[in-house]
Image (cartoon, rainbow over all chains, first blue to last red):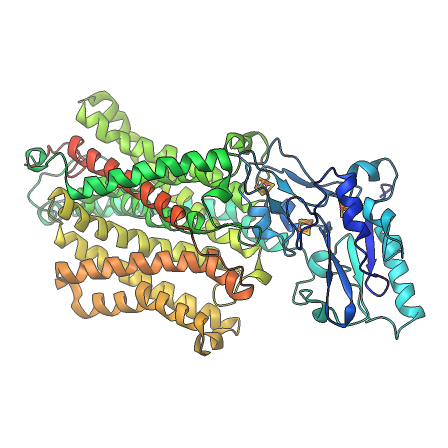
Length: 258
Length: 377
Ligand code: SF4
Ligand code: SF4
Ligand code: SF4
């Protein structure tokens, strides 16, 4: 495909926990300046301190085949061809199924608004369309967050691990998890030590639901034939022994419909 | 009839009125200050009691409507005709309550029509909403015969008779999809749910369990209608229904345990802890106890026993849906959710409204009894 699909590479070994990414995200996306300690409707990325003094960002991973997109019944969430997973409030019904479906617990809801929206990192879609980097990558002083084409980032991550195998745990988180994500991580320690979920399947979660939904026409066809045939069969049988039936079904006279 | 026996103000009515008034206030807050002002939901617990009870459990318990309709019209089990209307009424009210509940539950209900213009066929929830719309329509049509009869519109009644089997088959198909797809909803979250409740076969679990639960509800409401409306239950029919329910429970229970065993997580049910406790409590109420009771007593099962059994099934079923929708998520990552009293009150309101509507329908429409047969007393 000619269209470039972008993403982020976040290198935990380089992150100093300054929080510049969170601050710039706030500014660029017109969010109130207070930074919450977890993802909320108004904080789209946070930096958390883990043991060993490591710092890890949390944000939407912009999955290649996102569960949130598959789950949204009105397609309010969409995966754009440039990488960002974006949201359209004009069609969203606020069912919050996307929140249930997202394996990374990313989408947040405006719980105290009478006109609530789903809010989350949008990979700075407007900027990406202008050919610019994301706000968080731009603000990062140590290049712990790098913006680029996903394919290029994967190469970069592989090269880093290869060049310095002692520095890195040999895994790119997001390469295959839930079918791959546009935001990927490198870490000096195994990812479970950073409280990442390491039990995720390596195929898109929507494969599971689609496998089931695909059966719908079959179920309708088989069920329809079964019920139709049963109706015909039982009616025939009934005609044969109608007399018995009338006695058995009580004192009321039989209605001769159906 | 019973009209004369009913006083204007009874304790039950007073309680219901109080609930409804409080509920109205809460609904006002919900629409002016957001869902967070009445619920304990959070970004970590996006779905709570309203989804678990009003939607999952409510829809499941309404399954009696399509099962009884199919039994009478498709499988020609005519003896159940006296209760089929009541079952359809329950289903219809269940769905109406569900739709009202949905309007309260979703954040942006004014966009609900978008389901028609912006369909995403890859979403299980899209299928659920299509089925809700279609089945509610079918139920309205099925129930309309009662109005035709009440007002003596014979021509319409005749049209209805010609279409009834088609309608019932359609309703059964939609229900099958609908009930199972409610289970499909949760299959997308394998990493977030405790393995005793997660299964890629959740749609099958949901379908099998709703049949038993729907029948349990048919029995249960017969007793309620005796208690509140002085309408004697047809024990001869109910005991047979209970027997079929028990058979379905056996099928469900074998499937449930087998599924866990095949996926190699049955051991969790025998690991001491809260999860195993919940699992066994749920299955004791929903399956084990009712199965034993019904099969040991056979068709001679008494009123009291059947009442207890049907109550147990309904309770166990609600527990299963809660465990799938809420508890299983918390067993993986505890987000500290417990429904607020306001969530309870709104739920109680919806149920009260359902009872009031059912009571009115039974009083003024020929719901008990059969087509073409006038109300007996
Ligand atoms: S991380 Fe969650 S919200 Fe972001 S794209 Fe993936 S599924 Fe959607
Ligand atoms: S809350 Fe909105 S964006 Fe999320 S699944 Fe529902 S309709 Fe889609
Ligand atoms: S990509 Fe943009 S929206 Fe997302 S965290 Fe970075 S700055 Fe915020």
